[in-house]
Length: 415
Image 1 (cartoon, helix red, strand yellow):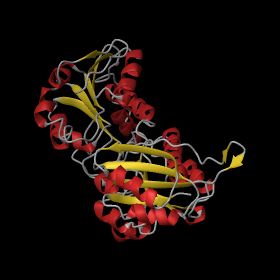
Image 2 (tube, one colour):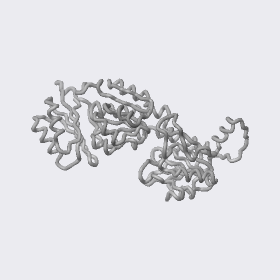
Image 3 (cartoon, one colour):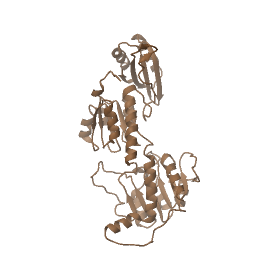
Image 4 (cartoon, helix red, strand yellow):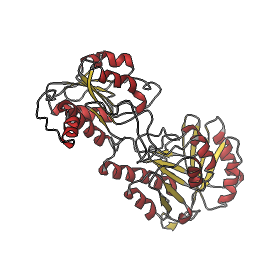
């Protein structure tokens, strides 16, 4: 597709070793793609994104308000992961920069890791393996249990929690769950009336909640104390959810028999950096470096999904799947109308969702003498997004008029 700005001049900067499938998709579109193996911060990050049109990150690179303010050419951000808390979303919205992610693509990988950890904790596999590597032959059934017949408590019964539920039930576990929203149970799972009820009745508790103000510090010292004596805690959700100091004390004191933790309140920015936690060195505690969704299959699928969303936005203005701006699904460029070739201009405008803006916009188009062939408008919160296909005319003049409107955030002449 021919665009008003040459594709080979559209600079895409990808951090943190984005899977090659996504890198290749963007490169095949003709964009100028730079793929970096690690996260960046400070002056290095500022320099890397200063002239970028598209930035892709995973979970470590922090696109703060200050970083976004310095990225004057930025058109869009791709989060090649489930979350978007590493991006200053209000500032991105106010700059007319859509942010895309892949919220559900790695759910199976996280669910499978959780099931593996449930079994490993009950069989004390981490301890047995460490002993063998140290030359100790400890052939004993002491402390080893089957998971069949045990009760699994799932906190957060969304896309991941519900998959864990199905897999666990197939292995013979009884499943209870707690969610702040009413959720239809799968199989024989049953909802708990409260989080406290779930904690007190479960042999193993697994967390699958998002990072929100309501989940920050959800598993407090008091709630850990209410857990069933001898039970296990698994956190493959967010590091902000659990009081890790209290968790460590509960394990060393014998109240809990073990834990598996994949996410932490403070995590190193890149591989190779030193990791520290009060959970280090504790018996029957499985520690993993935020790899719950890090399988080759998941990373490839995430890369394909996010790269596809970025390509659609750059090529035709579609914002479906964006987390911070209105979602508008758009057709591709219409090349013909009947037997006659058509070459319309497509104009994209982000603006404040204020009464009267559309009237001002249409007035500006009328003053410019533009004939609008189609118009797509969607609003969400404080932001509006309108896409115009207009008959061939002076596109630059129309862009100038729209940019000058009070309440206009950003106008882009696509083609």
